Amino acid sequence: MNATASDGIGTEAMEARARLVARQGGVAGAISSGTWPAQVTVSLAEGLVLGLLKQGVRKYLAIFGHGSTALAEVLRVYEAAGVLRTWNFRHEVEMAHAATALSWQYGEVPAVVTSIGPGALQAMAGSLAASSNGVGVYHLYGDETTHREGYNMQQLPHPEQGTYGRLMAAMGRSFVLHTPQALRDALRQGALTVFDPVKAAPYYLLLPINTQPAPLLLNLDGLPVRPRGAPLVSADPEAFREAAALLRRHERIVLKAGGGTRCHPAAVRDLAEATGAAVVLSPGSVGVLPDAHPQNMHVGGSKGSMSGNFAMAEGRLVVVVGSRAVCQADCSGIGYPRAEAVININQDPGDLLHYNRTTALRGDISATIRRLLEELGTPLSGEGRRGWLAECAQRKAEWKAFQRTRAAAAPRLDPTWGEPVLTQPAAIAAVAAFAADHGAVKLFDAGDVQANGFQLVEDDHPFQTFTESGASYMGFAASAVLAGALADRSGYSIAFSGDGSFLMNPQVLLDAVEHRARGMIVVFDNRRMAAITGLQLAQYGKEYRTSDSVAVDYAALANAVRGVLGIWGGTTLAALRQALERAHAHPGLSLVHVPVYGGADPEGGMGAYGDWNVGNWCERVQALYHRQSI
Image (tube, rainbow, N blue to C red):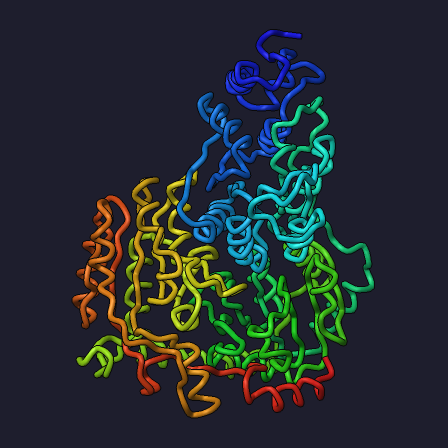
């Protein structure tokens, strides 16, 4: 065995292996160089790190504790050799959000590391954002020891093993490394989860405290690499013939572009233009069709838009592409009341067959659309299709005029602030326009800011906006700004956060300075949960416990952290634009505090145009759902 790949679990042997990996440009180089032995004894923790490196995972976001000291030592040694990088954080939920953004926005799958107990539970809670949006992230948590010598501190207090593994399995795929020799299969399952091309997800790998330093005879060449697969297309020619016949027969076609279409904008545009379909977007797919495209009807669903919801309500043939039929996106299952048939393009069989009367085209979106267009042949035209798009265009013109009116709304007298302040649509539109002018990515937090945001943004390309509408996790956007400091290709992002959302993870102020993040958080402050207040007023006519009386100077709070610039955003559009310019010029993280109107004036928001199965609306919506045929 070559001395540079020293055998054993001691620090010197581990340092020699780390230097070899660095010198050979990675694990693959070390294996192919001939200087790495066929089998080598390492600790389980080091074997895990080597296995993740083989899959291209070289970034770790960590809050270490007594449940992760062995893993921390391996990361220290390999970072010293220049092979990987670890960033420490102050809160596990914030850390999980930053990891989600690093994978989602920048395409770099990282690993989240926590100790046992509360830290792991908080990271798991934060992972809901990744799970709901189909984002792959490794989650590595400490776990109780395997010898059952007594209760471990911070374990779940049950006299049985595997309780954390079962808990994590309720969230997604989970694996307890009770036996070090199971590492190979653990990493195989992890790779298939976090790199799944259809529905990536977090993978929860539980590391018992005593197995992390345990010796393992490792065959590095036998550990799995990142999976790759060619795009698949259905082999059923009859399904394509049936779909093409439906497209020819129906003239009032609505194409629902779900989140899965973000990586296939050209194919979606080709299909829409070839069939005369009105395209309705989901909150997460804005930009798939350029905003000004005449067939782009904007978002549809429980909030939706005038034009998007009109197209959904009046379409006779629904073409669903890359969508999982979220209740808010299809009005709790009643969004297509006049639909007679469905064509569904998806790789997930459950989503593919969500609706009745479906012609299912299972496969990669772009490849499937190409095959469908080949079957269709000549692009479709005719008076009926032109008339349908003309009706939709009229509704879109109404919606655009409405957008402009709400975005230009004058400040409203707000009883909380005691003076006129900007409406939320006016403030959000101003910040969105600023982001577009400066090439900044928009990150939207949950709540009223998120809902008004996806109704207002006017993107021309996917991934100009990330709206965490899957889990609507308060605190995501502010935490996600940190990902820019961790990514290989850093970008400038602006977080659109409500006051409540920002306070979920204010640790970002400290971690942004620590990790030299550059970006902006805009806090739209109405001192209430405006989205829920709006629901209460619409359903019951009364607000209940969704506001508070505590004033917070968020600019002062930000300025208390040396390196962060906090700015008062003012009460006019001119003042807000000046504040944004100052914030953008700052070399680190900046925060702009914007007071916004939170009263009952309907011009203070963008409104709702669909149906939702919540509150006292349930009986009516459910009755409609059970009369639906698709």
